[in-house]
Length: 262
Length: 181
Image 1 (cartoon, chains in turn green, purple):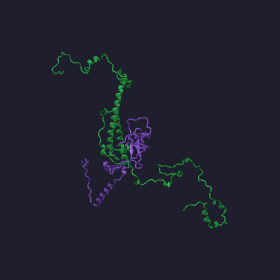
Image 2 (tube, each protein chain N blue to C red):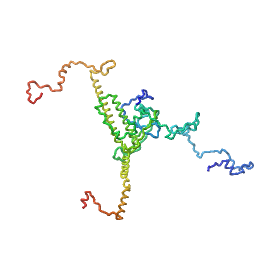
Image 3 (cartoon, each protein chain N blue to C red):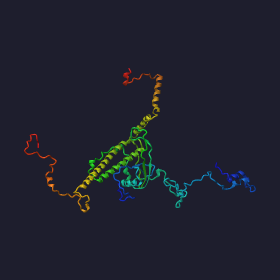
Image 4 (cartoon, rainbow over the protein chains, first blue to last red):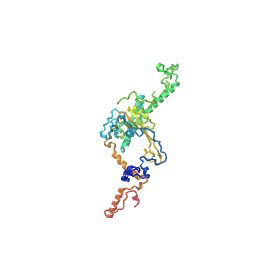
């Protein structure tokens, strides 16, 4: 039952019955304020209301992301709200989205493009690259190999993330084993580059003191970085070349026993 | 594989990073539409970094990025360490997630029908067994009731009282039996 305000004219007319309709009988004087259509209203609380949230933004509360629909102050002049297209809520009635086979995000998956590699697939790997094998590679190859490793790690972490979501299955140990091989390869790459840098740095430091090397030479202008100097002691060095490593031969007349081979 | 465009669709940064040591993880998000993808990125990553990374490493173009940092709950000890480390309370590092709006939609491959290749049933059984055993290790372990043993004891007692079974002294086969002659 709906509550009616005490100033309701209908309520009062009902209460007084037919007597009210007669113009001759007037309501008692003490009830005249009740018959006023608009009674003075005052809030229950006397403390001032804060208008902190009233920023005057007409789009306040309207969000496309949260599907609120147009607000009361949003005026659609081209179409009426009833003409607005309705979203297809039933998943079966929606058009199926076809993923591009060349999409870049396939890089996060294995060759078979399954949601998760099996432990048998994960264990199917060889050993990592060794430092000796990588020493002959140039920067471009090493850089490319590094990124191959990075993408494989991303693939494995994606698998572990999906596995965590599904829960309760094997695959941790196999993925970890595969990652160790990748980290070994990355470590070898870093080692090769470090050794290469050290060799270059040592050469540079030695070249600074070397008289024959001109570090400020500009190869584009045709200047030579290495200009060997001729030395007068070169002839003596040639005669003794190769003999310094070995001991001098024994004198000619020496009595060598039967067991001496030389 | 599609080749990377010569010019990026956004202003590329000047700082070049070689030999990166971090990983970016892609997640399955059934609640999000196909044009969205969610990544877990390093904590120091920015939205611009992710846009650059996805474009240069994976040739994926995006329209927008939203990011949030998820704080981890306080834990005791190291979860990887099998040995329990009580009272070593700490909060692990937070995770940063970024949700990206893709230019081209991407739908994750279907989940496998059965997880037999990953031995899911075996792991579930072992986890249930571990949980049961773990309950006994808790401080209230001695309050845990073994219903099977209770039932067996009840049946044995009933059999004894009814005369179906006759009580016999237990013959222990351990070393102690030699001493207790």
